[in-house]
Image (cartoon, rainbow, N blue to C red; front, side):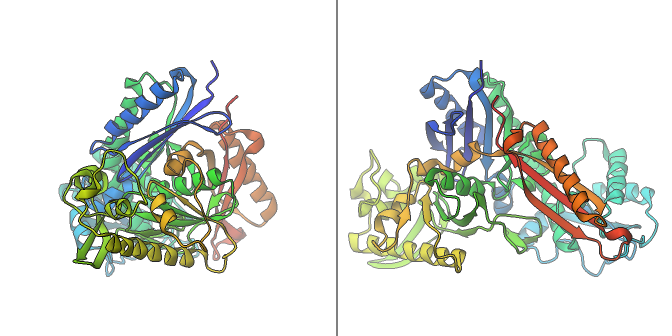
Length: 521
């Protein structure tokens, strides 16, 4: 039997959404359920219901592709993270600036256990700072484990260009602490900047605890439902990685949710260039789609107050969602958000019989939302104040759109997410927003559309620039096809060149990514 269907799932802070799409990328079935404390419970419910309602055979499912905020939430909530020790490969001993510089104290104190500096590292011209010493790495690993480190981040000076010392150090750590001991090498995660790259490596290590548990349980759900297809995770560039890659590099999954929403929204609205607004239960994300792909941020980004330097989509996140708490004093509006009841909306919101006043209550009060089996008489707001709440939210969203679009005022604005009706129904007539069919599951739809990618990451000479780049592009294309992409539609979507100005032969680190739709043949 041909495997003609794909299931896309988005695990959000409030809801877990699922869609089943056919080979023409049309939504056959969709389902929305509450996100559960144990992620796999919500995923099981969504998959089970999709299979029942669609009546599609398990054997016809080509793959299950999941986007999740699990990594982001683990950082923001500072829960269930590994304790991390750091080994710096830096013979000049830059100990005046210690790891976790500028981190919020709460997460630093819960994650960071200490660091050791060993000989090695490189000067900007490629010379070793000091000779690398493998035995020092073993001693450092023992010391850090003795201080309670449950994982180790390895960070070498100029390692993105010359990563061999980090690899040797990782081998030495595993020889000392065991082959399964969690390790992250900074050269495989971040860019040249030492501090930001070190931050990324530490966070990547810390995230391996929640990711291993969450993702391995998802694999068991697939087995319980007798599904033999691959289960893959979307990363923040809109492409797929397998579970092993996601567990090894959980940081790559951060912001995959907004990326899926932006791609799904553009496809649903049939536009390749647009401003996207995704209003969920916990937050609203605003971004830009250019040529069908999310615009990338050109600056260092911050997650939980920690500065990182790996590539991310340009996302403006507003702490406004259907579950946002609303505070009023009589008829005077005090605030909307930033705190939210999230997945507890149906228990806490007044319209459901709860005691908390939320944005959902305000929207129901004036008819922006019509939710079955709710009681409007429970809402403590009067209509005038409810209008003030919605107007306040709309002003914040419009300001966010202005910031995101800059001088691209010609772009259409697409509104998606479960909270889209809130903004759509109360916006002035002069604002022409598009809200396509199935806008409430744009995130899961985007996950279902995720492409297969192949990435080549090499240090090479640019003395013959064009021929070198052509060769690496061919290799990236071939790798994507080998991993399941359709050859005729696979394209080069990203080329990064990190020149090493002081090295002979115009050496540079070159990262080439090819991406294409899944081969359904």
